[in-house]
Amino acid sequence: MRILILNWRDLKNPRAGGAEVLTHEIAKRLVSRGDHVEWFSATYPGAPSTEEVDGVRIVRGGRQWTVHWQAFMRYRGNLRARFDVVVDEVNTVPFFTPLWADIPVFMLIYQLAREVWWYESPFPINALGYLLEPIYLRCYRRTPVFTISASTSNDLGRLGFSGPVTIVPIGVDASLQAVGRKAAVPTFVYVGRVSRSKRIGDILLAFANFRKAEASARLWVIGQGPPNYVRKLKMTADRLGLRRTVSFFGQLSAAEKNRRLGEAHVLLMTSVREGWGMVVSEANACGTPAVVYDVPGLRDSVRNGDTGLVVGATPEELTAGMLLLWRDKDLYRRLADQALAASHSASFDTTASIIRKEIEAGLLE
View 1 (cartoon, rainbow, N blue to C red):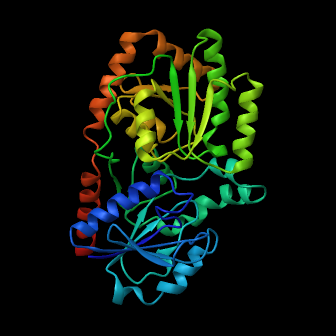
View 2: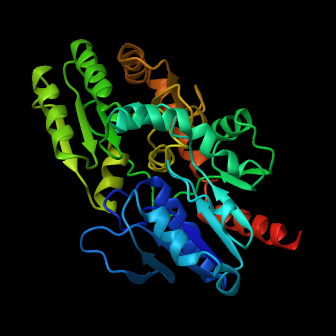
View 3: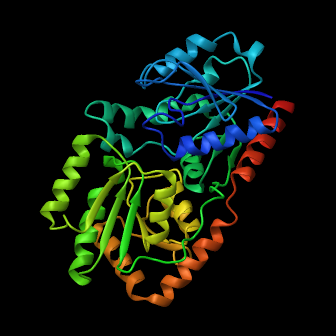
């Protein structure tokens, strides 16, 4: 098949996240099975206009707020001759392909933005985005959809989506594995984009509370974000007396990130919402359970009381979960073992196979 993927970020974009990792893992597996895949995304400083990555042809044009128009201008009226299907990846702002593509369209959406608007955009853009999202998604209501969690599927149902919605499982890098030895002191880790919607300030508050009960502890924050926001978080850590116990690592190599995921006792996630939270699955593969806020996506990736803990969305509830797992050794061992076991069923090969099968079936209808 000849497949066109539209997503405003590609894997090499400095702002790429779990969505782009999953998309690329799927795309390169489609290529390995004989399909042609072209991925159109926004450009960024230093990026070539075209390149090939793992057999996937990457084409770049426009920036975050103009890439959608650039995609329309590049492909309108010309798709049928070049591609069999377009996968429209909706990441906040859609490409509106059901209105202009002349070939079958599949929507790939990991999460709705909803509350994220209030954290990531200034006024009045945040208010407009929040109000308009249910409206501008209407053109996809009869489009076949791929998503990764029951939470997002339910959100789409509430918006009146009537087309088929396929929930595909998250894959995990097969090279991930438990290191076998945890750190000597209670060690917590956050991994991901350092942005306001991730509510890392809540993690700092919860960790400060934890240290009042357990003096010897460490927190690792792994990931990059806007310098001003990172600086603000460091000032918060200083104000809470955490300067010597909280480390901000920025972006780490995959090997170093995975090593620290394995050495840490618990992953902490406090996002406003997620599609799934791929790092939860990655931590599980390293033998590390998670304590997460009870929000869409995270309540799907963590089976409460089985592979981790799902707690109320407050720093106090997060602290309680951290203390419970540190003090109840039997519970911790059980959750860590079950998290590791659950990760063994996560495979990018399975994810790619399901998506290809559904696309193939859709083209035959």
